[in-house]
Length: 255
Image (cartoon, rainbow, N blue to C red):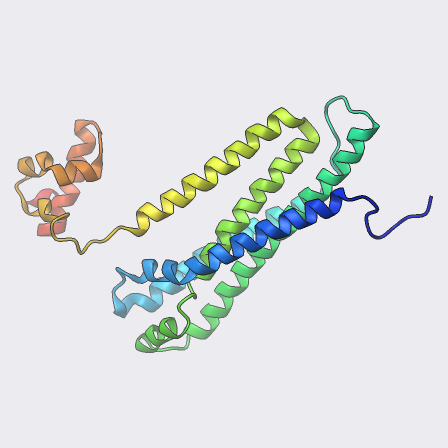
């Protein structure tokens, strides 16, 4: 039977279109968030230290993306998926399509990792020679500079987890695939919420931080302080109370 460069069945095309649609939807949503993420990161930054802070963010994001890139590249070069459960000939054909989906998801993840690494590198190259005041102008001119690599690292992680779910389906079957897919969705939602909550942090809310000016005993009983720290044991409460006193007096414990 003659070989074909293009698939002769409809299943691979469905896989390709589905991944492309997910990619485009996330690309659209991510693009909308890039400027906002940059603003959130810089919101509480001292303008005189903005350049150094941005360089540190780019360095950390770039290193993280590069490490992920090496992992995903290794995932792409592995052996074809081999089911570790009983299969018939029809199921073996399906595993072939699952393997293709796995490779495609790995490639998309690698694309996002590469985008994050290079965007960090390009920004570092162009910001490094600037004066601190000119670096502020740079962020106004290119307001997605910090948000772009951040979004790409997040999407690379999502597609990497999705690829692992496909690998699980092809090697361990449907039950473990359902578990890994649910965990991927939960992880994605949790990380989104985790990031969103921290983006709301501000040290400028006078009412929220008024408890730092109270005596130590009154500070520990303040509802704003207790709301921030949460339901913790007395020792933990004391430690955070001492740190809170430092905010007002410059001395740990407020002494």
